[in-house]
Length: 369
Ligand code: KG4
Ligand code: ZN
Image (cartoon, rainbow, N blue to C red):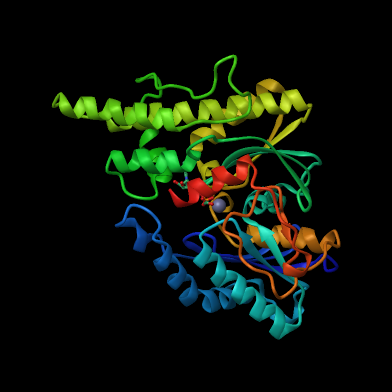
């Protein structure tokens, strides 16, 4: 509808320069430029290279998005940008660009949280999010179960990983198997030809006394690495497809089990899964199976909207405009460890100190490990 907010969103928290344009919950453009090939030979994202690539890609990607959407920048109702969490230098490029456009065009600026954006993006695919929303957020730097009564202002952590993020585990196992970076997509592909029951890898934090909604993937990672090493030491061939399938099964088994349990415990009748790992085909299938059995409706965006993109930032920005949230001031700064509990960053003038809580510390560790 023409009266819904028209918002451009900029995402530069990691290695993807994403620019999306939405009108309300309708996606008009999703332009992306990735520097992943530059990082692949280093086995991980090199922050300095990512920042430089964002700088080069920024203006052309914005122009491409405007052209695809068929709109003029002066028609926009707001400019949204990922203010954190993410790589500090990379975030800074997006925040600076958003400020420059907002200032030059005299449009309101909205600094938003990358993690809340991963959840809000589903509005572009499945319509307005129910309130509260139960979300399983699984990416390269984060793995959390979140209960969000309002995605623009109230996001509550139910649990989080106490060590590695799910995506990080995929990336590390892919490295051990010499499969390149990022690891998720290639493990997903190889696992399709492997036996998920071939090797019984451990399921972290699933004992009866363990925290119900927290995750741990570091023990699994070590177990898989040791198993591979033992095979290699014995001079035996490593059954890569079976290892990939069995490892992947261990991750998605725990994720889906805990997410469904959280929905049941909280009486929430739907589950949203977001973040790069939500692109995983086995996670999607098992979640579907278990949600159906529990009478829970599953919402997962298409894979292209699960991995980092600009549309998700625009989606959350549009929701901020629709709900009359205050715009950020032009002193807005990037916060590499912005906690998941702050979906919206009003800017320096409104700034309040946030607690360095559990989830916050975990996210920080994962981003720099
Ligand atoms: O959300 P995202 O694009 O960036 C961050 O915010 O971290 O997530 C990236 C992570 C990487 O660890 C990548 O290996 C993982 O998502 N990933 C996948 C798949 N596609 C991407 N993991 C499992 N299966 C996939 N198909
Ligand atoms: Zn992400």
